[in-house]
Amino acid sequence: MVNEIRPAEGKLGILLIGLGAVSTTFIAGVERVRKGLSKPYGSLTQMQTIRLGRRDENRTPMIKDFVPLADLKDIEFAAWDIFEDDAYQAAKKAGVLSEKDLEEVKGFMQKIKPMKAIFDQKFVKNIEGPNIKKAHTKMELAEQVREDIRKFKEDKDLNRIVCVWCGSTEVYMEDRPVYDGLDAFEKGLKGNDPDISPSMIYAYACIKEGVPFAHGAPHMAVDIPALVELAKKENVPISGKDFKTGQTLMKTIIAPGIKARMIGVKGWFSTNILGNRDGLVLDDAGSFRSKEITKKSALDYIFQPDKYPDLYKDAYHKVRINYYPPKGDDKEGWDHIDIFGWLGYPMQIKVNFLCKDSILAAPIVLDLALFMDLAQRAGLKGIQEWLSFYFKAPMHAPTVYPEHDLFIQQMKLKNMLRHLMGEELITHLGTEYYE
Ligand SMILES: NC(=O)c1ccc[n+]([C@@H]2O[C@H](COP(=O)([O-])OP(=O)(O)OC[C@H]3O[C@@H](n4cnc5c(N)ncnc54)[C@H](O)[C@@H]3O)[C@@H](O)[C@H]2O)c1
Image 1 (spheres, rainbow, N blue to C red):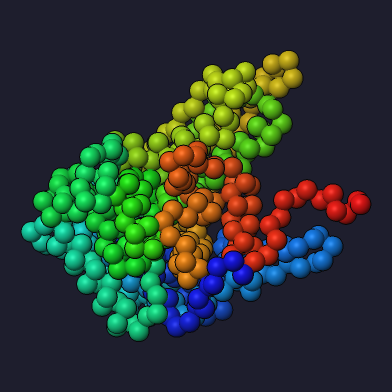
Image 2 (image 1 turned 90 degrees about the horizontal axis):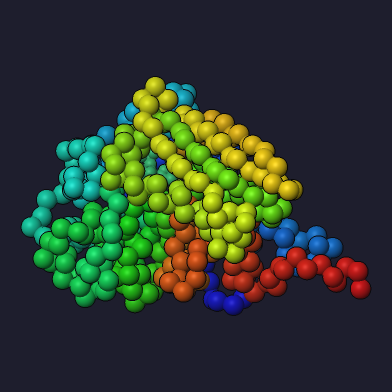
């Protein structure tokens, strides 16, 4: 074993910021799986195997039997939200799961009542709620969150905690001097700097409490230099950002295939309609801008137009999200892709994906929580690039570009697990079978 990995003893607390569609679908799902009522489809930690050694050794254990992950039965949940609805009420309003599926876990869900949130309408315009913390400074708000974390740990007798941002998307922010270093950031917290957002305060508080933080939305939060610095200093793993579900998942499945065959792209138009609260928040131009940027960046990195100008330099890429209430959480996306092949002859691909956003996101939350906990027990700190697989805009070192290709991301993730457990990395060279 390369790193000594502490065992997953005792209970793991999962803290969720935001108790909306994704969080409640995740919590209800874990409870249903624990009760043997449903299967955790979509989750690598629960369902996928990993090949070890040569192909003729036939060693392919389940990931959960290979690396020491927390068991689902040892998980406790807590959440913050600006609304007072418990997890059951919030799940009903989100309208993702059926009445029957929710009724069977109703008692459990009702016990999860959201803690008071940090909220500032400057950062999320289209909603407001009553369940909000009050303080004189942003540092005091961070202290209150730290107190919530300690209380959760004590009340539930937890051994470890991880946090996943499942709250609304905040507005797009440019780099600011207050984000650049920890000293400036802490001064900003004490001085109520207007550019420090609620999500940054949560992330700061979590890292200070030694709680790994995974960022599921596209806005700037734990990815600012000050918090990356803090995570390294406090030996805490962080990862982000923006869960890779729906249309972007499809893009990062299709685009690497097109590129692998050196097929050119003239244009890629993506549009979708959705009607949940996330859609309402994204109806605001500032929040949409955060999303647009993470959604658009994937194709550029996959196609590498600078290296393949003939094929991709002029590719026109447009992304639209439209709030349309009747759709609820059942998003519908359309991709129209103009491609060209041999001698420049044009062709088209059309994708019409009728997906359920939160159904795709919930297993990501579970895997991230379990892998972030593993990372911490393995002594990993700072940005966890091996978890890029789960994100639309993977956090990465400043010296490298992010890896967006889903298949490279998957290889990276599995090789990291092999590396942690002292197993040989798999290169797929395969000459050994023909010697
Ligand atoms: N569902 C997906 O496929 C998917 C994919 C990628 C990213 N995301 C992101 O995940 C997040 C959650 O998505 P959702 O569909 O559950 O949205 P949602 O609107 O149903 O839930 C978000 C919840 O966060 C709460 N909230 C907002 N600001 C908060 C704050 N400062 N503190 C605490 N709570 C706060 C809201 O009240 C709401 O209940 C969104 O940012 C979304 O963009 C979702």
